[in-house]
Image (spheres, rainbow over the protein chains, first blue to last red):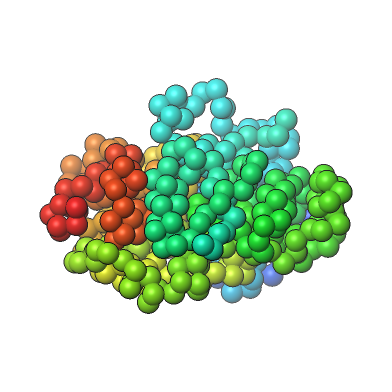
Length: 137
Length: 294
């Protein structure tokens, strides 16, 4: 993977938005990998949590916005709980999802969810799904 | 009779009725009342992790304000409601700037008297801190003798620890102590605090199915006969979806999943219509009959 480093990219509007929404000190990450080790869905991710942190540092935000990983995060808060540097990694995931959703890139389509699933699932899951995967618009 | 304002939430009013009804009836038989607060609205199901989404705090703030008229505590039982209300209250208490923005959307009365010191508590905190597990043990009518139950420590009740201020999520004991108080045998297991897959069941159901299957297998290998949870979503993933697990794995063995309050209901000999086992996908009745508990 070829990455070009330049000032514009490292301080892009995307990077600033992630910092503003998540309030996390991204540069504190030293790549120990504990977030990934504890992540229950890392096995299924195309970009695992510590890689995500690295890519945010490098300003490679578009790669993350088009990843599957940001939508697989279950918000279990394990990554942030175990981070030795006190970074709430889950908030960085949320910031990435928020950017995508605010650009109108929904991950699910309410109308296409099977009726059987909606009948059986508790409201909590359905509302959480809409909150995490659909935009406010 | 001591009365607590109670926020049942959406799931407990519909799909997770057994969790709710057992809680109310069990508390009644212990001499307490859970008084549902009037005109409550959905908590929002997930606590917003985006620092600029102030509007997400309005619904929790309204619920908290309503309950403050009757008590300085608000009791809830659904893990999601507990997570959202407890974290929202922490923000509203500690972040003056965000509190002021949220109060713009509330009545004048709330603006002047926002209850910063109200504490959102989980029902199990009443058992642990106010009644005490030892006293609870004396109140029960039927010991859950020999029932091997794996306590499942859902994410939302325990994490993030700095915001929830509940119990150490790396070494939680509370459900274990609760099971012991009811006379059952708690079975610790490696995946006791691993995520069940939560709401990704909406978008990636095959992934959450794997997550939940790992948890059930881990509990079984540790020797558990049943699982305990306080979260309606974990219950859906771990109980209702056992149907799919059985289709996927030929060697999969079903395991009943109890709600936190159903176990107390059995121990207090509440009637079967209150226990609501007909809503459990894997019926706990054969296990309970085998153990002589029904």
